[in-house]
Amino acid sequence: MEKGKVDALLGIVFGDEGKGKVVDVFTPKYDVVARFAGGPNAGHTIIFDGKKFVLRSIPSGIFATDKVNIIGNGCVLAPDLFMAEAKELEAAGYDLKSRLHISKRAHLILPTHRVLDRAYEAAKGKAKVGTTGKGIGPTYSDKAARIGLRVGDILDGFDAKYAALKARHEQILKDLHYTDYDITEEEKTWLEGVEYMRGFQLTDTEIEINRYLKEGKHVLAEGAQGTMLDIDHGTYPFVSSSSTTSGGVCTGLGIGPRDIGEVFGIFKAYSTRVGSGPFPVELFDETGDKIREIGHEYGAVTGRNRRCGWVDLVALKYAIMINGVTQLVMMKSDVLDGFDTIKACVAYKKDGVVMEDMPFETEGCEAVYKELPGWKEDLSHITDEAQFPQAFKDYIRFLETELETPITILSVGPDRAQTIIRKK
Ligand code: IMP
Image (cartoon, rainbow, N blue to C red; front, side, top):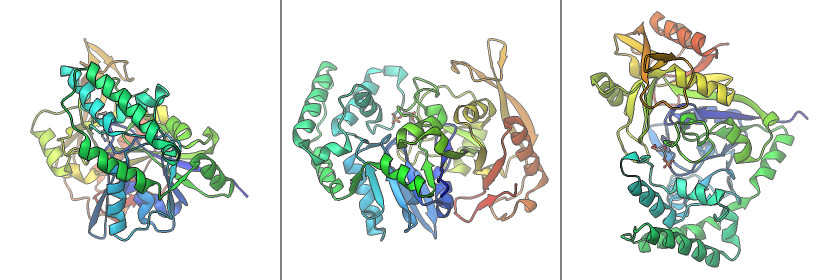
């Protein structure tokens, strides 16, 4: 039997590209959907049949009732938030316990990790990362420091391990003079969440995934965040704390690089960023406001305004290279329907020097744009690429030529049905 493959679906800019929708569209082709990095900092929105769900830690394959869903070892999980998310899905009629498998090696986010997240941000003053406040950084720090708690720990001698790590965190908070917090209620719910999680299939998911592949089954690795938020390749230090790239698929699921098949790079027809950090394409004018308003660019997790700008080819080329992207998926093309002209950033400029490659530091870089005609037509009703307006076809061809990668899927609206698969 031919071995199955793991296809990766990755946000390749700053996250919020609409991965949830694409995973949901892709799911019928796969046997397993797996998350490999990140945690409840993600917010994957899925809309179908007039219903809307926002998933944070649970893979987007959960709505297809015959699929296995895996939370891999590279993820971090907050038991209280997981419980709330899972109960909402259970209330909507989805059976999770038989279809959701959680890696024993995934790390746990403690209530005190969230306090530490706030304390570290407060201590940074003006240089704040603008985190989601979900305790992501402190949890991955403890993982790297080899003191973290893992999901498997809840099965054996948990109370003492929890008390020890909590005490360690409390000491750090005391040293930081950050003592004005009260986690009593939060901790109660968190411990209920731990108990609730004990009722799930906590497994060695890396062994399970490799067994599926041997059986010829296909796995979709659902990315979270985006390449420019990757701990190694993002706009450090304004990044998240996990490996959000295709390399992270291998470590975060426990598979070999040769098991990866297609790498789908997902991006929007324009750019957004949440939180702090350099963003050379950011628009501070009414065009930026218009993109935000039409695209509903407000954070799914925090509700914050997303910073908006034109598409950034410097970032996209870099991300395509880092991930080995084989196909591109362009989202939210319809948001640009009303613009007379569309711009694309083709280079950065700093101190008079024009750079086409991603520099070490993007702070202070200005965007150099190429301007293209807008299509000024409603794309949202289009069901076949033959119906695309000529100016939109030209925009696609321009991007494909610049990025040297085919755009095989286009989204023209939030619904599952508003997805166009292009003929190769
Ligand atoms: P953290 O992941 O909460 O530590 O946040 C670090 C940075 O990543 C902040 O700028 C967040 O706004 C950003 N970030 C984290 N998760 C997401 C996401 O799912 N979409 C977009 N930005 C995110």
